[in-house]
Image 1 (cartoon, helix red, strand yellow):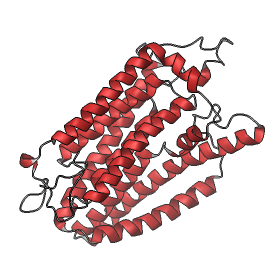
Image 2 (image 1 turned 180 degrees about the horizontal axis):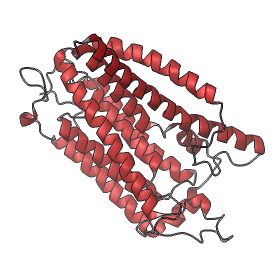
Image 3 (image 1 turned 30 degrees about the vertical axis):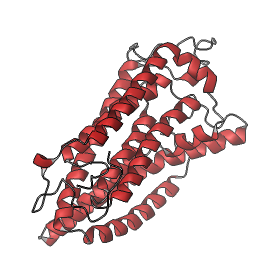
Image 4 (image 1 turned 90 degrees about the vertical axis):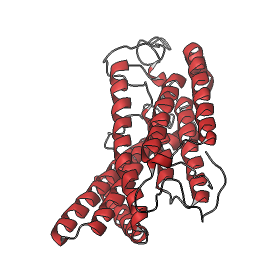
Length: 331
């Protein structure tokens, strides 16, 4: 990834008119270096997990970890955040491009309802984890204990719906204003990013969800609650247990953490400085979320490593399909 540039650059994805110029798009040497370095670290982490998964968890697990609880509560929303942004871009693209008023209102309204639904889903996870944490503190038990089923209704539904409505209205107004200032060329790029983004999130969620079901791996914190003997149900990451109701492998939170990296592709291609910041933010969210899940005892090192490798490569592949660098080159 290129780490230098200025805002006057005409990025390589644009041709002389509107749209994308895939014929001139190439993965840069800097990008190759970063991807290979991260992939190498992932393979090394997986090698360590192959032999020392139990040892790593025994050394670092702490369900009272503030670091682990923060990321458990608020890093599980990457998929919804990306989908929300995609829905907003598509909604205001329709508003701009469709001439018939009735169709325009219906289609734009439909996409805004979809964005609202993503806000509801985002808040379901965040509120459920937050209220579970507060309940655990009140009971004098570890903050993050047995707190991975975010579907538990332990919060006021009115709170979730009202917050989702306020968030959607405010952010929709901001997106409408931001996108109204974009050229047709910019919008041609952003609509591709939005459509590919929805597909990327769907593939990531389906892939990780299906693997969770098939692998049937027990979580670290479940090891002491199965047969009374600590780690009695441990299996290595490569062992498929089949459908048994347990879903530690791979990590869903890590998937969402790495999906934050996709947001860098929405940054205007001329704004290299912001691209750098969003790319660093996305990489940090992916790595820190993975680390936090091991720390809190919700996942093994192997769980988060495989999820990071799969979703990281998926997001990178999506950027190649779009024809955009995470950080655009100067030339």
